[in-house]
Length: 149
Image 1 (cartoon, one colour):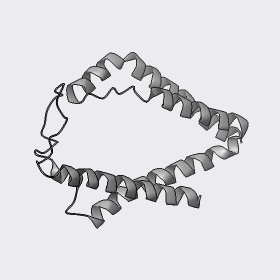
Image 2: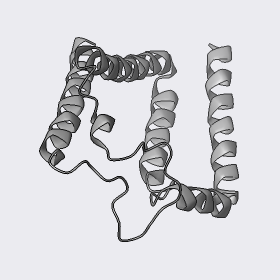
Image 3: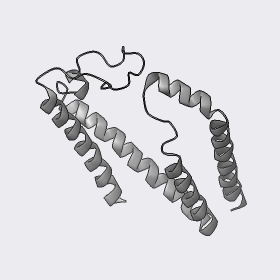
Image 4: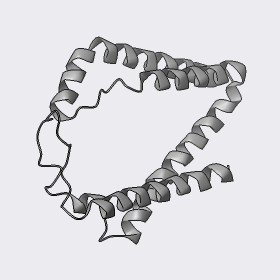
């Protein structure tokens, strides 16, 4: 029992150190992301802190539940990954990036007041349907595994 508690304490200290390093280097991280995309990399910090606090609370109240919690989280994440690949396998000729005007991996930088990626004219609705289809498939796979736990 002592080794399990020590492991989780060590993991929490490691997460705190990583968070402190990321906060210390936040200007460089934001500059890197601004050059590639308009997304702020720290926009989900509050959710991450809340999740870490909940995990710490579970560890403090009932340390034997920590492996179960991590196991369930891993299964749900694996279900999302498998849902993505199910979409790729079921619809190999209808990938959402196939409706973009240019290869999104070759575009550099962020342009304000312009869309991130241009869609081929006339295919806007099909592009939106492909995105929604992928989100539904991934979400349903995650829901199926989550309800089975």
